[in-house]
Image 1 (tube, rainbow, N blue to C red):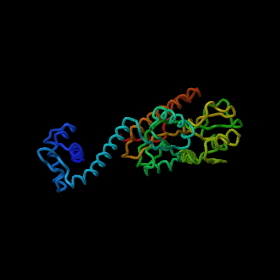
Image 2 (image 1 turned 120 degrees about the vertical axis):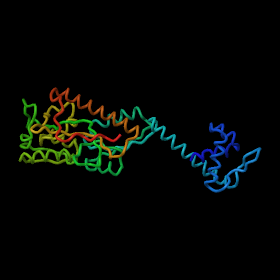
Image 3 (image 1 turned 60 degrees about the vertical axis):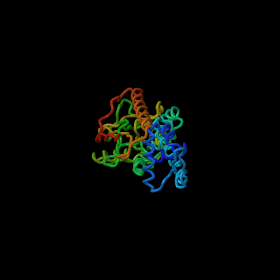
Image 4 (image 1 turned 180 degrees about the vertical axis):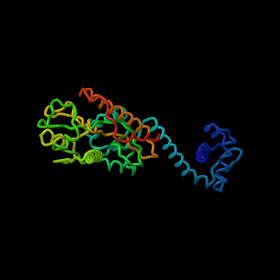
Length: 320
């Protein structure tokens, strides 16, 4: 490509000397590159005289192709430089419904306010579908729960948040600060079918203790879970970040203990893949805002400020 660039400059200036000045090279270096190009394609590209340099028929035929190739290369390099400087870009991401319905919209609005020329594309997906989209590279990264034995992916923790029980007034425990898993299984529950990993964690802990979930409602949307709890039908099981602030006066929110249940929310990427500068800036902002949200939630609640003990191995560090 370097030889083609030199060829175009020589052809457009009709002079090896002027081309050398434009390219900031010696005239002999320019002449050498043209000779190498002519040897490579097996034809002369210029008629050379003491007074002028003129394209041969083959040189004229090559010039148009070379100009288009050089222009395309320069455009590509310019676009890459602009992307590196966060002037342009396209971010494709995915997230689980609990994130799309809570903190994410404000974070994306904040990012777009600073980077109006960066195009964002978001897909709201259940955990299993999110991993498929990352694996097929339909999206650059996902925000979702840690998934054990998903070895093709990098999981970098954003937050570790406790799982809560949201109790309707009929099931309130006025002096309680927590609710045990065994106590919870005695109550009617409403669970999110789209939150597969949280449901798997709950089922695993219930089974290991010889317990059984009774009278469970299974819904898709977060708002449906809240509506069921507000109507007094069932206790909603959901991560801390999904609990409304301020909390509805008809509801009581208690962290689950014995065992402590938590969800590790992660940045999910495909192993071996790296993120663009724009995506890196967005994920950094997401991480900061999610952590601030959880910290504020604990301050408002006035208890449970420390993150619970993790029930699974720490996330694998992302490839840089």
